[in-house]
Amino acid sequence: MAEILVAAAPWRPLLHSALQSNSHIRHASYFQLATVAANGRPSNRTVVFRGFRHGSDTIQINTDSRTRKIEEIRLCPYGEVCWYFTESWEQFRLSGKIEIVDGSNTDPLKLQLREKSWFSSSLKSRNQYLGPSPGLPHLNEERHEEPLLDQSTGPVPAFCLLLLDPEQVDYLNLKSNKRLIFISRQTDESNYCWVEEVTDKNG
Image (tube, rainbow, N blue to C red; front, side, top):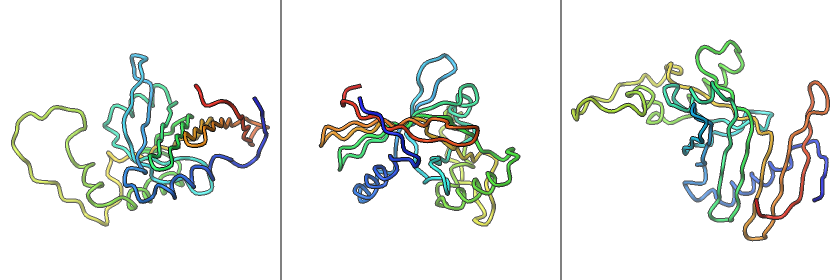
């Protein structure tokens, strides 16, 4: 197993290339996010990639504060993304720490980031945060009128932005039979670098 020390994230060009080559496929922006449930078992669901936080490798995900994943992340802030691109036969597994940014966050820059992500979403997507709590059973079969949302209004309380900061990225290319592992390591109090490992595809 070879080990190469690099400063910039070497997996970003690979992911960018995969996104570009699969951009014509609608589901290419969807991936699975796994967290740890309160009972210690894995908990998985499909979410939408909302881009990277500007100037960083941090992945952005929009979600509802009333979903089970929020409670799970508060108990254990670590998770893993599994992202498979069907056109290019590439898989990315990105694991790291997840931060929840809701309306109670005290960092003004992160609140701005949450607001930007809110307005970047479609109106249909934003309206979903006004509906009943996800995962709860309906009390009756009656249809209720859709709540109306002022398009100029900022994020509603239920809207959360998740920030996944990758600490390890496992890349697998099934066409070339190539597997790479990238690990983030701290070099001093405030700086990190990436270690690239070349290994076999099994694992």
